[in-house]
Length: 283
Image 1 (spheres, one colour):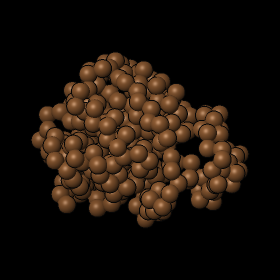
Image 2: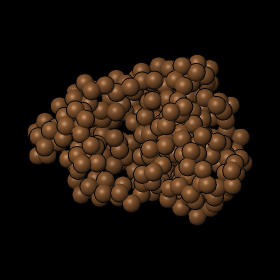
Image 3: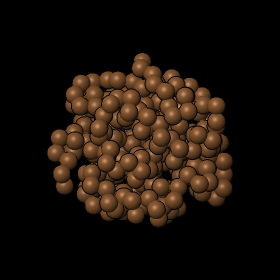
C-alpha cells in the first residue's frame, strides 16, 4: 500500500489494481474508504486503478486540522497525488459525493485533467440540486419490489424531517438496481468504512461557490463523461444531463437498471460505458 505526504504532512494512502494507464479514483460517501469501489466492476482489466483513501478514511492518516475535510480543501490532496505520481495530466473518476471533489479539482487545475468521469455524481459544487420530486419519481420506479412500501414510507419520513440514520435501513435498497446479497453486503460495509465526523465537515459552509465553478468549467478542454443510473434519484438522468451541459466536451450515459452504484448492478454494462469513453473520449 503506497503512502505519500499531503501539503500539510498528512500521510495519505492509495491502492493500486489492474494494468494500463492510471485512472485516479476518488471515493464518495462522503468520506468513505475507497475499498467500496472494489475493482469498479472489472474496470481494472482496462486501466490501472489508483484508489485514493481521502484523509481520515481507510488507510490514510487523520489530519491535525479537521477543517481540512472540507471538499474544496481536499482538492489539494488530489493535486499532491498527481505530483507524487509524476503525472502531467490525469484521467480522473469521481463517484457520488466525490463528483463534487473531481469537479472542484478540474476547475482549479484544468490543464492537469486529461479526462473526467463522473459516476452518479454529487452536484452541489455546480448548483444542480436534486428536488424532492426527483426522489419521489425515482422511488416510484421501484414499485413492485418487496421492500418498496416500507422504503417509500421511510423516504417520505426523511423528506418530512426524519433522521436519516434512523430510516436508512429501509431507504438503502433504493440505492441499488438489484437488492441482492452482494448489494446488501456492500451497503453494510459502509458502517465501518466511513468517517462520520469528516462527513459533517465535507459540506461545511464555504466548500462550494457554484457560479465561480461553473464559469471555470466552461473553459475546461478535457472530455467529460457523466454516467447516471436509470433508478437513481441523486442525480436523476435528467439532472446528470444538466451537469454534462456545463462542460464544453461532455456526454451523458444512462445505465439501464442501475442505481447509485452502477458497477454493482451490471458490471459489464458499466465497464463497457466507461471503457469506451476512456478509449475514445472525444465527443
